Length: 98
Image 1: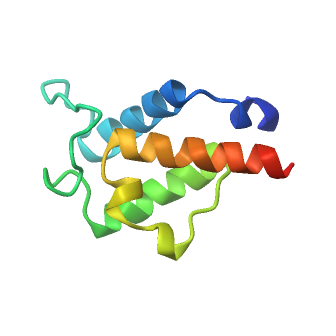
Image 2: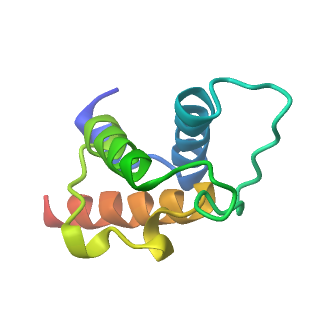
Image 3: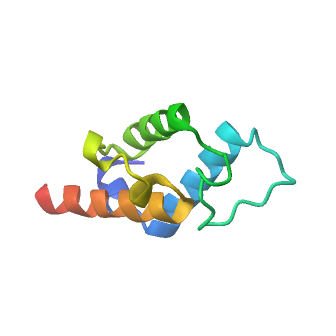
């Protein structure tokens, strides 16, 4: 995928990739566990503080966005929906600045 197409990636595509990463990395591909878009990673014990850093590394590598320390908050990173919204906003901002 080119850098330009990543900038135009729809939120649904971001959501799909984030869900796949979380299921594979933290739920170890457990097919019996249903992960809803609004399930809290922290409340359900899916992602701990170390896992947040892994998630951020994935976001920075996969979507070519930078996540600042002050953005490491549950409002941005505590569910598939929140992460997808956060990343999509970052991608839009990057596209506008290009």
